[in-house]
Length: 154
Image (tube, rainbow, N blue to C red; front, side, top):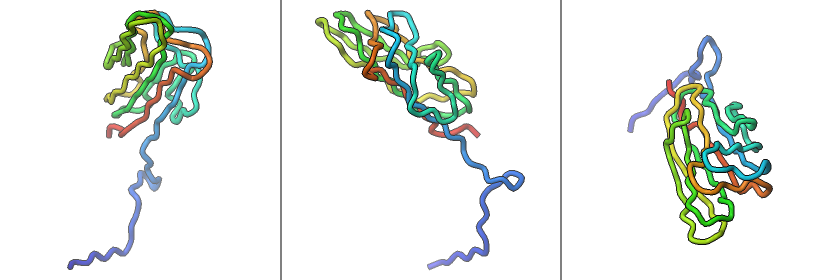
């Protein structure tokens, strides 16, 4: 069996400062403002977590503070309707992932979309109502949007 002897372990530093990888995470929800109609971005107006300050509750959008690979998930509740409802996660207003609730009768349904995306700094991620009557927007935190940095691009 081999043995390794080390006199000293030093952290990787830049000019004597220990480098810590960037930390980015958010958890947002929509709990007021009414329903979100077809062809509109869903504005998640409140956060419980916003590490890195990338999420804007005025626009409901996330702006990547650093380049890297990110995880995103959204779950939204449809209004009580009888049409199909399409929900998209978009990067810079381009659809990168989509989910659908096909509704046969007037009822609420949940739609979830999950995606892993590689972003460059300042790219914007949003959730969009791409079809159907709308998504619920009042109390109850039925609509959520979360994301986190898996790893920064070096």
